[in-house]
Length: 306
Image 1 (spheres, rainbow, N blue to C red):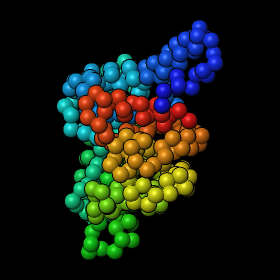
Image 2: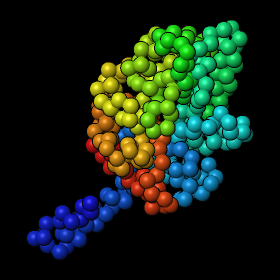
Image 3: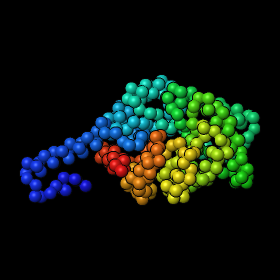
Image 4: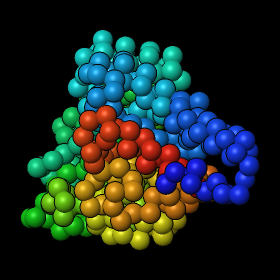
């Protein structure tokens, strides 16, 4: 909606012109990098490629120019060490915070809920040491952990106990480095059928049992809208174990305002609760090209204007 349409028709011409100028100036400022978001939204590589090109450094500059002060990258562990360092240095120069990268993700296997042998633990330790190395290089505080598929031949409670034991081993590697594993429940119905961890109350129970500052919840509100809804109530119930949020609207998993979730209310709620962490923009763009990228930015401006 163009706010200039709200000018009162009875104002003098000069006053109307002045008012239009002031509103246009305000709107331009809201779209510029000088305007700060209330929450710390983290975009990802590829989201603004039509504006910034394919070079990740150029895209970081574009993100910062548009007011984003964080970036997350699921595949950071797989990027060359030289490129990791280059990205990290540029983020430092731009005063941007590194969000999550995937530290451990099991898809199609049930190892993490099945095995607890010394040899298996040794493999977990090795993997998390690698994650710590990447986190140190990237000045990152969080890494995502996706805990396996369900083992259809084993009772769920035994699987939960096995997962808790394995997460304690992994947390033991992360704690000295200050790295926080964030467990991400994923939905069965729109992309990830059969995964063990699906709901916020389930993740809350597991984090309480692991009892480590390095094992917390990544609350991806897109997934939780699909799986369980009741977003704000579950945020409140699990608040002390939630370290990170990710978002995407439903249906479609695109930017806020394209689906059924009232993200303006959700963002206002977590802001008022004092959330100072990162809100990851883990979704696609609803429209293609530069127009679609600009729509993403304006969607976050709108939802952040509570």
